[in-house]
Image (cartoon, rainbow, N blue to C red; front, side):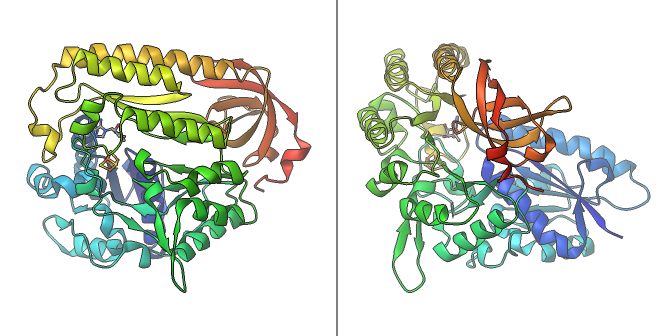
Length: 452
Ligand code: 5AD
Ligand code: SF4
């Protein structure tokens, strides 16, 4: 009988990708994915350690799962913690929640069959938080299939930047790029199985430097051009980028590769040079502004998204004003804002001048107001325009599909089921805070990309 697998994913898109790959590794062992932990034989929490809140959620979810596990009479439930909390706090999890059967970090997913077998034999918790010498990518099975019209593809993992607030260099390890041939083979497979949009993923994706068979390396710009050549690939995105790694070839790709969407997530973190230095970011606010100018010169309709942290240790009111000024100057289509969260083991956790929680709240609210207003302006600007929409979800009511514009805006539209997975031309009629609504302009032109 098939065994049931339930994976709950927290955090970033790389975790979404990793969860899919874990399901691929486990499929040959007879595991079939289900969407309810209560019926699963194996439950994996794929966790996020980036901020304290994200990490805490894991322990409360484990408490809930424990009750299900304890009540289970007919067959055992294996409980596993994967991802970045597992990597950072493996031993602590084993101590705090000994009823967990497996704890393993992001670089060991190819060892899952062996880990599962060990967990079935073991009494205590099986722990694997190595950074193995072998790359997991060389040992993971081929991607089974795209899960809809929009697919993720990890091309680079890990980070060597060591921003002083960030756990990623510790949880994901050193920067590693997959070879070009492996990326292209996976992209082809995704396109053949219905992906129309591919998002190239990496913690530091624009530091990509993949080896080419026969010698040499490709940067991300050349990789994007190669992915664009693949039949069926209509849209390409990449995330997340580090400003200092935006090279000329990548900026030019925004001009030269029509499949590359005119939307870029480019975390700035702060607009104050003093804070950026303390964060160990290798760019100034002025560098960021100049970079945006270059991107806009390459592609006039490009829109930007970003990440900002407020209340970094030592951030003064004047520093925060510099962040507001950067946001006002650049103009973002959307952005994520975070209160600085002290992460044990990172340099910033030990810095003087930790900012009071109430002050962080005030700054967050002020920054959010500005960014929300920019987002509203951006969305309102789409009204009356015809945009291409990749229809990737079913809407709340029958006959409605939901998709994404080139700018990642959610777009609701009445459309036949046959267009699911296709790219359709939609005229936008209304803008809401977080989405757009529109009508189909041309269904016929869009059917080409539909997934049967
Ligand atoms: N506190 C708050 N925000 C953080 N981020 C990373 N580490 C922290 C932290 N310790 C934010 C950064 C990053 C995004 C993924 O999460 O803005 O770009
Ligand atoms: Fe973290 Fe900085 Fe690396 Fe991004 S670039 S993953 S913020 S250390």
